[in-house]
Length: 601
Image (cartoon, rainbow, N blue to C red; front, side, top):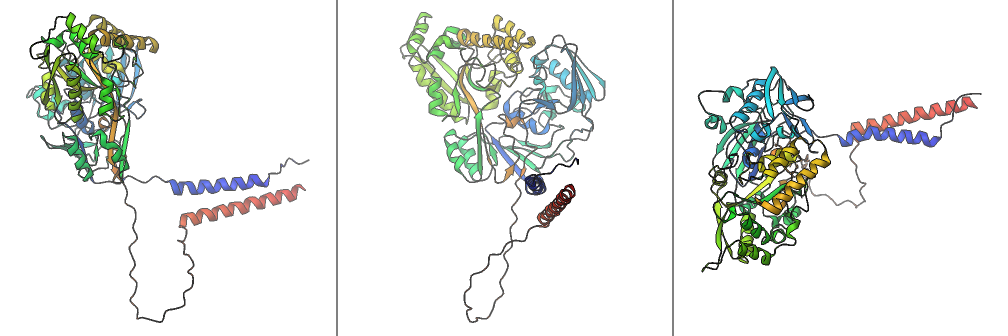
């Protein structure tokens, strides 16, 4: 009895076919190497304010900082935390001690080594100088370096999402160079490096021409992959229509600031890519309110009446062309902590009758001019969608005899008026209402706490509710996800049904428009402008065949026309090799099969 098992010939054929596939697939699907070089131009509607991450709380400053400065950790496309300047970390002592192992061989743009002293100095400065991330460091009791590449951070309590708060983005925790900032020559806010930054990132700062552009050049000594672009330029173009014309003319390569009604047309343009999606970073366009204002908006009854008279669905229907959802809460709809019933008390809005009744009961009578009072709203110059929103609000509020005065304001002035990043409740804020965008992010503690805690670094509303303060502290330390969700649900309910320190107008979608025939590797995260452009490179040019010149010949007698045989390009060496190898393997297998079969019989 022999132990040989006959193989079906079909199995042999399949094996050979699979062998052929494995030979040919790598040749046809090989990834092309990124192309180095080129100048990439992107645009935005506003000027950055300051290029020191400890002090920069606005979108456009952080957009610039994403190119040249880096944090310890970062989000990947799935919003998972991954290493950046910290190569790894451990969490011990029941979540109260974080030990960061730093990446070695990283250099600042002036060729000085990046070490633990830079991290320790940055974190201590955030606390001592009331940086925009100061609220996140409230539980921190100790920060020290164990050696040149190990940093230890100790907390007085375990905090949910503490690592999330160290992500770059807009959170103010990118690392600054100790050897430049730790000087007696300048106070932190007066240091020239705030406008001429030195970082560790993929691009080096070149210049900032106010009102025009910010320029970067490739960091050839960058520790990570890339960058592939030689020059990176941010153009400041406040008006959306101007930005659109510049994009279509090829003067800019990427933008997020175009009129929404033009997106469908742009999607049909050859060579243009448009990506739009609900914002996982939970963006909310809101009407922020100075709750301590001596004017009418300081009265919560006025805020309730105005909210009842605000038609958020009309705003979305008339202005956003399907690229936003009607606002309903201080947390965006794509967040797992979003409470869809936060403002259920108000029912279907607008309800002008109820709003008028509230104002009548509160004693706000109608004057001879037909209005109870006038409120000023400040909105950014060039953001036409926000101007249009204010016009809708103006018409809505006429139904309750309230006049809205719209004041167009430059972004830097607007930020100063609301005292953005100043945690003191009575900080001399100079506004009543303001249109302002905010992002919750994947972890609510990183942005909800500093916005609504009474001493929060981003609480430009000067909002203070003792019950909300207590719930925010509970949300920081609660480990159970379901219980945490209940906490943030209740925070939203109190804010939307009782206090209304803000009116959530829209839950926005992220928008990215770029020339995909010219550039590849763009970050299309919802907050791509926080992710940097170090992976962007030029699209490889298609090889072109040079035309061959036909020799000039004397006229000859026309030959009889015969059908020409089609000519084919000879297969490449690699494909010939693959085919030949497959044939050889097939012959060997068939020969072995026949030999064994004959032997078995």
